[in-house]
Structures are given as C-alpha cells and as structure tokens.
Image (cartoon, rainbow, N blue to C red; front, side, top):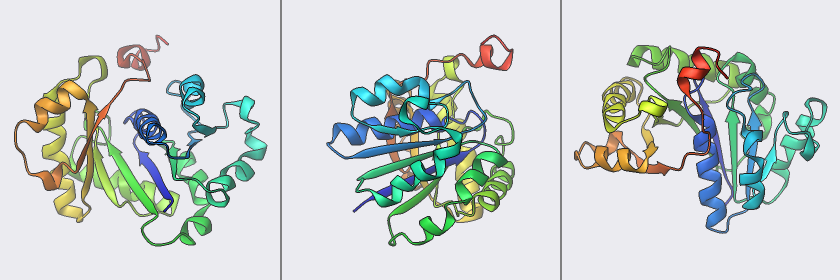
Length: 235
C-alpha cells in the first residue's frame, strides 16, 4: 500500500535531512520513492542541493528550486499531483517551517482527504534547541498553528533534537523529556527518535520508555551545514 508522509515543523528542525534519509532508505529497499519539496522560503537547507544523491538512487524530486525537473513555481501543482496519481510506494512531503510552507500544502487538502485510511502520516519534527520549540507548551502552540495553515492533523512527533556540529546524546535526552510532556498533554504519540547513529545508540542504551521514543531512525548526514554560519550570516 502506498505510504505518504508529511513532515512539518519549525525552521531548521531537520525536516529536509529526515526526508532525505527516509527516501534513501526506502529506495534502498527497492521502493518507488518520490520526494516533494514545499519549502519555498529557506534557500540554505535546500532539498535541490542533494539532487545527485537522489538521482543516484532513482528517487524522484519535485521542487520549485530545481528547474531540471521542470517543476517551476508555475507548474508545481501539476507536478505535486503526481504524488496522488502515480503508483509510488513512498511519497515524502518536506514542508517549509512557516505559514507559506504550510499553506502550500493546504491546497492539496482534498487529495489527502481522498486517501485510504492508514496511507497518510503527518509528523511534527521537533528540535527543542530551536526557537518556539524549547518547551512542551511552545511545541503544542506551534503545532496548532501549522495544523491550521496546512489543514492537516499531526499524527506523531519526531524527536530530532540536536545542536548540529555540537550534537550529543544529551541533546536527544533533553528532547525526550520535553517531547514526552508534549505527547502526554496532547495525546499525540512519539513516532520516531532520530539522530546520528553514535548518539542515537548512546541515548537508546539508557532504557527509557519506548512509548516516547517510537521507532529509532539513525540518520546519515547529507545536509552539511554549520548552524553558527547560518545564524550569523556566514553562508
């Protein structure tokens, strides 16, 4: 059965990295995979920068920033329609972490509504070290705003807490505590905990409650970016 996964969340929460990892893993398992980039704002963490990674693995990309696929701003709606019309095994929507990104998803509300039960998952990617995500209350407030704009309901949280170049297992531990509270308050389960393999393994060795860990996903690093450079304009 086709699986469609929507990744929403705050700016720089790690949606694009997770989308790439999901797509590469699925393709490696022989699944027909499509990635749709709906981030119209952030030119720093761009899916289209990884076009060779995707092409090498026979993963198709629809992106407004990659003219080579013919998916310019004017033809994006037709290109996105392929997610629903063609016979994919996995489709991953990487949605920009702002109102514009969420609204760009909302235009396909009827297409999502027509899907069979169990096909669609909507994951809120949370990095507790990003603004507006430092507490459970802030996570839930932002989630509600993005849900309203996107016209979709979050089905699971993803703990992707990290400090990029300075990441450690302690980042995931901090994220676990905060996201657990958000999960308990909202009733939304934790679907995944993601991170670099070494830090993820250290975190999992703690033996914490699996209900608030979900299915662990060890991430390969494709988006080689410096958070310091990004926040201080040294791009």
